[in-house]
Amino acid sequence: MRATDRTLIANLGFADPDKADGLHDRICQYLMTPDVATQVAAMIPAHAPVTVRSVARATEVPLTKGQGSYKQTIGFLDVLYKIFFQSSSGSFDQELIIEVKSRATSVGAMLRQVNLYREYWQGYGRPAFMLATAFDLTDADMSQLAASKILHVRIGERFNEWSERQDRMATVARMNEV
Image 1 (cartoon, rainbow, N blue to C red):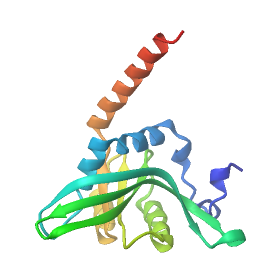
Image 2 (cartoon, rainbow, N blue to C red):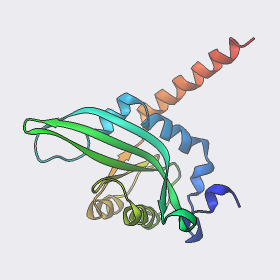
Image 3 (cartoon, rainbow, N blue to C red):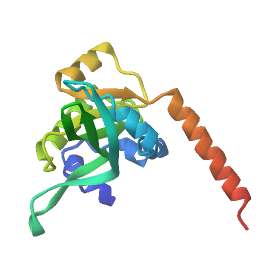
């Protein structure tokens, strides 16, 4: 059993099979870039016009429960943003937890995972949740996510272009090795 399989989420029977997939990691890297993080942050619904001032970003953040010898890892948050907003009435911040899915899976499995994270979240306030998928969702899936207050972003052509640029830069770097 791999270390990442010893989480509560794996023990409950819905381990994330695409974690071993290079595409999953590449999507997380893409979401961590400053420009993409700012674009995604701007998707959070607000009650008044706001501007994204900055976005602090982290990836593969452990979500735990308990203390000391009773501490148990629930799972790993794929991407966590702390977004700092500015509005005409002042500034505020909001956390956004993004679950990445590179392979098609049932909306029920995605909801169970996000709701487990929601249950054990111990950060500041109530975070927003988002699903970033590399595949299309049905209208029924989108309705179910909306009813659960989970935002969605489809990873698409801009990601593909970014990924190709990363591959070209890696090739050039290898060619320049001594």
